[in-house]
Amino acid sequence: MATYIVLLGPPGAGKGTQAKMLSETLGLPHISSGDIFRENLKNQTELGKEAQGYMERGELVPDDLTIRMIRERLSRPDSQKGAILDGFPRTPAQAEALSGMLSEWDADVDVVPYISVPAEVLIERLSGRWTCRAEGHVFHEKFNPPKKAGVCDFDGSELYQRDDDKPETVKRRIHVYMEQTSPLIEFYKERGKLVEIDGTQPIEQVTSKLAAVVSKA
Ligand code: AP5
Image (cartoon, rainbow, N blue to C red; front, top):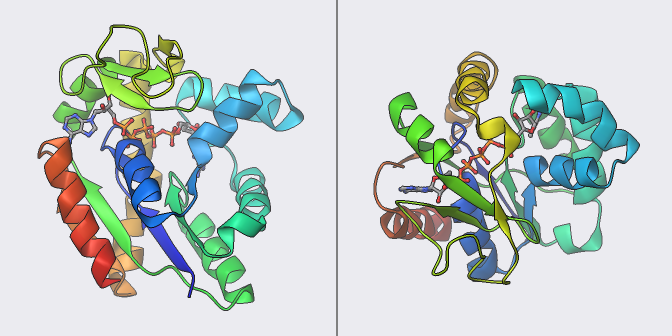
């Protein structure tokens, strides 16, 4: 049976950090819409060029483009056993589209862990975040420092600070999250899929709560 997990939470909640670990534990692909957009941006594909302005402003890329991209990713053979979705869906239209595509494959979203973190914590997290160029591993200068400054512990690649982690863009992203993505909390609650996890705890504690939630799904 395929297992589809949607990680929900505001920018900086720890979705990427937790998704990477969960992906290894469960042997399921980690599908991050933000990572796919950034990869396309780096390679200057048509998709990357279309997404660039929205990302720089901290706004959402239009639904049709995003849904097409995720459909293509979920259609690949490795996603047929399930996936950990990080950053998608982000609007009610995306959530409806996800249900539609999974039902075509006789599957459904199994569980939606919602990592909740208040806005003031998010700003500190994002301003201290360092991301690895090769595979998107995530560190924090205070909460999760790499062994050697500027170098990824896992693959030795360079660490960089994301352009959209500038304070003004972070504020915009949080605002956009509140307006356009937070309605998904109710959407998945109504469907009995949502489980809230306190994301202000240390990374390891969030990981064990998440593991417990997922094992019951
Ligand atoms: P995306 O890349 O998805 O960004 P996001 O959702 O804003 O999430 P982040 O990656 O910023 O945060 P995270 O929750 O993964 O936190 P992390 O684990 O890194 O999207 C970027 C852009 O792409 C969007 O603005 C939009 O333009 C576009 N886009 C993407 N998807 C889209 C969609 N579906 N539709 C339309 N547009 C889309 O952790 C953050 C920091 O905190 C790290 O430094 C980490 O080390 C630290 N940390 C993590 N957990 C803890 C903890 N428990 N305690 C202390 N520190 C912690």
